[in-house]
Each structure stands twice: as structure tokens, then as C-alpha cells.
Length: 273
Picture 1: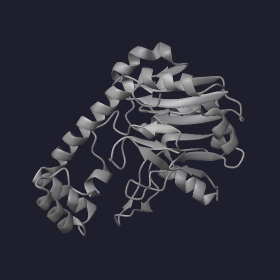
Picture 2 (picture 1 turned 45 degrees about the horizontal axis):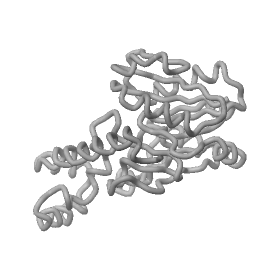
Picture 3 (picture 1 turned 90 degrees about the vertical axis):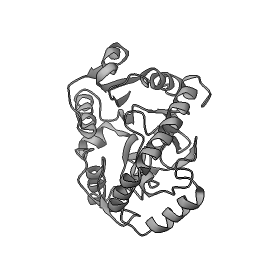
Picture 4 (picture 1 turned 180 degrees about the horizontal axis):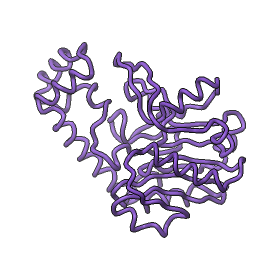
């Protein structure tokens, strides 16, 4: 049996899309456990199990879903964590079974996000027994050094520490292609899973704060000049400068247009047919 833990925050727009791709690309018996909020709670009957408690922290929701699952699943059952705006674009069964013969856990690793190295819950799979044995925890806490020269933590930080401390060799699933030139959102990982990356939040990321401003600020000469001036500025100070110049709003608007366009095409089956 495959147990899937997912979260849909406030909106219901990804539910039918995600469930459609589960049905298309998972042939083994599976059950979907979902943490829902807002309009998504209207779709409780589409899942095997749902919880609509007013919890905001994403990691806690995933940890609770895992608790519900592990209390009733067998140790050799497969446990999948996946974001609500992510879904498999190719059959999962064989890849998961073959991978778990060599690694106890596989997960997306978003090194494109200023060098993040932790397992990311946008897509992760393991066995119920392994998750129980390490007392799996998705909360942030453990820090690492980024390519931007800062120490940071994020969801999956504590899981990274557990795997590191126990010397567990896990399989990172890297970004293999993307639907636009955005380096973090709208990506496909291991040629297997699509992650929209902005399905439930404002489309403005750490990556956006450190990328080139060409295409965002006009004219191009000014954008290149700003890139040159900001290249040695800390991420925190970049945030401040972007705010003062109104750059953050421009990036947000630009990403929002792309996000809506891609979602509409996914809904019309223009991708991943």
C-alpha cells in the first residue's frame, strides 16, 4: 500500500489536478491523507482521510499526517510526502520500488534555491518503517551555509540533521527541466514530478531576491548596473534595497502572471499529456 500525505492551503484549485495525476501515474493501491484549509475543506470526500484543524505551520501538518498514517500502516508500506501543487508526470511505482532497494529515502533537493541542501517535502518518499525508526520530523531548525554566504534553515532542516547524524545515504531528486526560465518555480524533478512552487503563497522567493534584474527592471542598462552594484550585497540588504526601489513588487507581478498562465495550461492538459 502507498500512503500519500499532502497539504492544500486555502484554495481548492489544485485538488482535482493532483488527484488526476495520482490516478494516472500510480497503479498500486494508494490512500491520500490531506491537511486542508479554506475552500479546500469543501472537498473532504475526495480523500481517504482529511484534517481541517486551524494549524498554519506546514511542517507540523506533515508531521501530524505522518503520525496518522504510521499508526495504521505496515512498516513496509510506502510513505509519500508531496506538496498540494505538485504531482507525478510519469508512473511512480517502479521507480519508487527500485529506489527503495538502494536508498531508505529519496526527496527533492532544491540546490537552485541559493544552495539549499535539505530534503524538501514538495516530493519525498520512504517506507513507513524507516520514517518511524528515525522519528521523522519536517520542522526547520538545523542550519546550513548557502551559496549566498548566509546560514539558513527551512522546512526539512531537522530531517537533514537526523539523516546526517545517522550517516544515512539518501537520494536527492534534482531539477531536470522547467516550464519557464524561472530557476526555482515551475520545475520538474528527476523527470518525474512537477512542482509549481507558488500554488499556495505569493510568488516571491529567496531565489528571486538574488537573481539578475534583467527583464524585471527597465531599461536593460539600469538592470545590469543594479546587478553589478548588488552582487556583493548581503541577502538581507538586498531585501531592503529591493523594497526601497519597488523591485519586489515588480518581481511579484511578473511571477504572478507566469504562475496564472502555467496553471491555466496545466488545467487544460497542455502539459504532461
